[in-house]
Length: 212
Image (cartoon, rainbow, N blue to C red; front, side, top):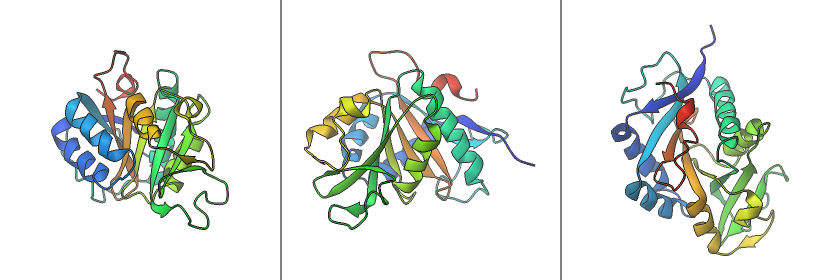
């Protein structure tokens, strides 16, 4: 019997150490994002089967017998719904590739740019863009770590240009526009999300979709 996967709210005290662990391995947007997480209030969620108790302190690095297919479909739906609120783009740090590698864009399948030696990818968000965004999440990172950043700004507004060498201003552009962070979890099969709530807009991007 297939389980329904959905956005489940987590205890902050349980989720924050895993978020810190994942972001601690990133090199482009992650360092400034770590500072934001420590400074700002936020809420944490995971993509999990709906019958799991939402407040459990789950082993984020463990194998829970989750199914990546339903988790990906649920993540795609969450991102599509978020695009109707305040989400315009998801930007991904590629921790395995660097400038000069022969195929950082996976044969043109990924929008790709360079910040110094580091490689980043991105996907626009929209009502029909969830599957493409999740494909970019999965292809643009090995899953451990997966550090991705949901922004209110579009790729054009952030200054992202496919194939370009970007200057360091893109870091502040992404972090200042960031509404949420997505990291890999549960043996790389699913996702943990941290939503920033100390912003001028009080509208929740993810919170209204979560299981109570």
